[in-house]
Image 1 (cartoon, one colour):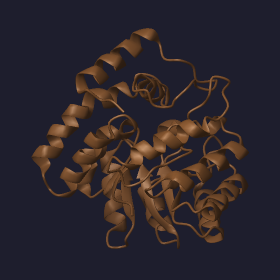
Image 2 (cartoon, rainbow, N blue to C red):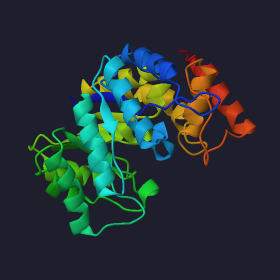
Image 3 (cartoon, helix red, strand yellow):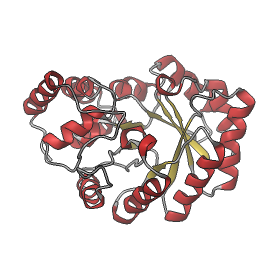
Length: 291
């Protein structure tokens, strides 16, 4: 199942900052019809850091109930007990897989890192996707550790967002033939790391340009490099715009421009600077993206 485009979906809020459940359902129903392979709720793009446990679980339940494509639920934490609770809840709710970020801030040693993921994989009956994003977490999941973890039952894939094609290459080299999948965690590197053997992307830009993103990944999977490259460069300005400010500020702003459910951000994230909003809107207008 770990092939194709998996939008890391936003969590829409009402103006009072409560969860917009109906808006979330509409967004998922729209994305489910665009050719995507699945959705990823409660990741960084979904403002998971500011969701309560109850909200987090509710978002996963809604995603499972209304999505017509597989659900990879974000369930990670730097507290193994919390991650275990969220991951087992996702399994019980019917999610197809769980995405677990490396423990951030407390920076475990290699033994602690291994035991963190192994403990969760052994106690929760659900496929586990590792998530490496050292720019956010301050710790890097090295290829040797990924290869070791890939031998643990239920650990089946990684979302790799180190920004290093060399690191992706080493992971693929060290896990070849094992059935372990590598997904891009960086929209701008999806095409080059699919050349190396990655099978898709957990994408931010696919929230607002899902059909183009799907077309690029499908072209690359079929070996049509010319078409994939053309779509990569079509998407490139929008991909850069998604990171004019901290994710998910731009993507939430873009979804609001496209009349999708979005709403405000929860502090400490704040609204996008007006001059950057203007750049984002101009790019959307040029691409002709509309929900």
